Length: 131
Image (tube, rainbow, N blue to C red; front, side, top):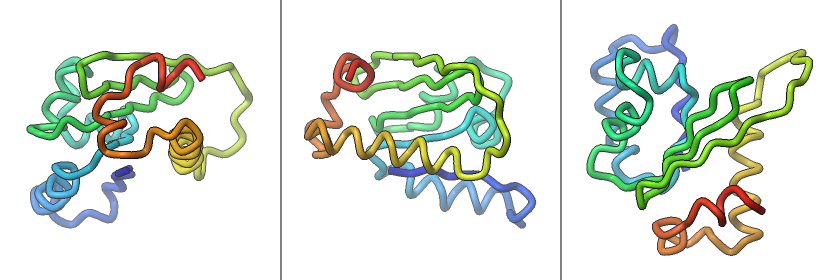
């Protein structure tokens, strides 16, 4: 699982950074990106579904785009898309939220016995979101 967690103020060469990151993206089974990360990596002038397609390249990874108060959308390997809203809460601090999201997702996949490459490649929207 990859969460690129882009911090532009630490990146000295955008092109080199993107090229190195693409090497990891090309072999990842799950890519979790915030909508801001996706905009920086691919460009924000096109619809999200196209951004995900560009980000994936030839890889058929599951791509999950987190959107803060607007929830998260998963783009599955078979082309299915599923969105999950989130309850309204009073946010005090967002540090670590992406890590907690990833940990919860991975823990759930383990509990459902869906962590093999074969299972991830064939996961359905029902398996991912309805448990």
